Length: 387
Image (cartoon, rainbow, N blue to C red):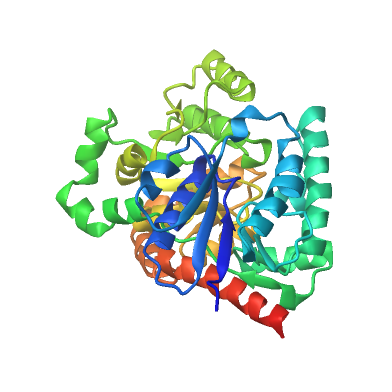
């Protein structure tokens, strides 16, 4: 009997949390014991090459940067079907929302773009048209996928309702904590390096330091940070909010210019985009994770914050409740007053939230389990097709 080939399509795993997710999953696949022959499609130039060097996995690197905005259509409808045929692939696992082409083999697709079920306001015409095209593309994915994976119960219900997807076609596979964060966090390191010393080393004294780890998008609700900074300043509170936005983005420049004109740059500090290795130190130094995003499919910073023993202040949204449960304090992301009041109660709740966070984190899988789960999902679909 010939070996059974499985293809992981990670062509879209290129930025921020998706890139970290992709690298963690690839490392898990390398160590996975399986009877299947594993093939992986990945974007060239994003650090995957070093991870896969010398591994048994057959890897196809794709130079996606060379193509225009319609490259994904060519990739999905021309290149991917060709690779499936040439490699004699028995099943495909696509890790980036889109896999629209109808293939002759089962296809498992990870859904992680909450915009496709709950569009948000505040985007320009060009971005709106791009999103509408993506949604059209996703409609084809829904009709051609054997199984769609989501990362939480609320998203499963929302996706099923909006796109009329039967329950049997949906599965939940939450993200796992990055192994780099797992190695850097936990209470053991905090006992070795006290938070007070870390804060002093970073230039902070007795200030309460809130950390918001996220790129800028309208739904990420960074404007609430500016409104909250105004309130902190007017009340004379010793609180600072740190963000991780890319300052080359025009919307970020506009927001920070507004901050500077109001003299709030000592209350609202943008660190810029930070690699995982450096971000670990900021998690260890901060007093809490502040997460006002109105829309997410999961929210990796939640489990990262739990790992580093940070209490969590989260937007009162279903995605946040899915991940955090009772390990967070929730606020109305449209109300600066509610956010301010919840920050004010943080000190009293800090110890309890930290303990609940450590317990909550134990309920999430590691990346080995995630990899095995994806492989089992496609194996089940392959078996079903053969019957």
